[in-house]
Image (tube, rainbow, N blue to C red; front, side, top):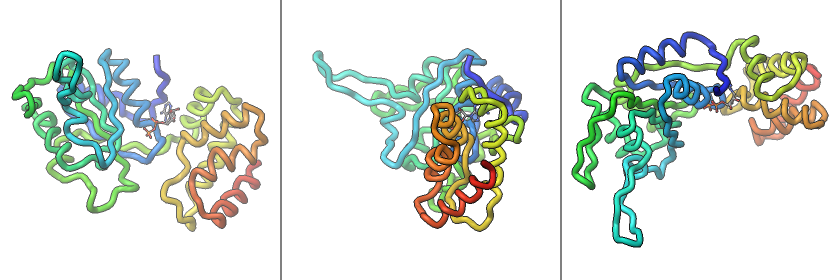
Length: 255
Ligand code: ADP
């Protein structure tokens, strides 16, 4: 079973949504456990999960499917959304605001009580199998006004808001994921919290749990701790030399 450290009542809420065929929107900064949570819930509910990382070239056909040419002529191939609809699985669209507008159009009839997917190119109108669930995530931090989700889309989803876990939960995650000892996990989580609290930096995003895990892996592999922090946690946050130096001062204060 995939390890997942709960941080609030998200498991109960997701289960309640799943039990009622409601779609779920997960908001939160990068690396705070959204993808891990969806994988864990899919296992718990015993449903397959199809994950799509959205980007601005993603088209509706990438989700729904397309005709391909094979040795015996053309044939239809379901996309991940269609497969989830047929099989009663979970379709998880990561960073959904990155996707093009025409992709959100295919989501609408699936995200309300119709639960149907019209496949224009084959003329099929699919009724979603009972276990089908649409889950989308986005990061409000880097959302531009232009790209924000339209209210008509947002209001179809049960919304869960994720953030970095409490210190004790985050330590447990770092230990479980990296195999490091408690002392290092405590120090890294303390460091991350200091870095997250720095107000006078111009970072796009704060240090995520993922970066702490990377850093712990480097230390476990024998990299000296300050260097591990630089490569695993500080450099990934910024390209600005002055900011790196300022953040490294915080590292030296902890280690
Ligand atoms: P997101 O999808 O929010 O960008 P991920 O789910 O990929 O982030 O999380 C990044 C990594 O952090 C995961 O691979 C996992 O190792 C760890 N992680 C973060 N939060 C949790 C959690 N609550 N339980 C278990 N692992 C977590």
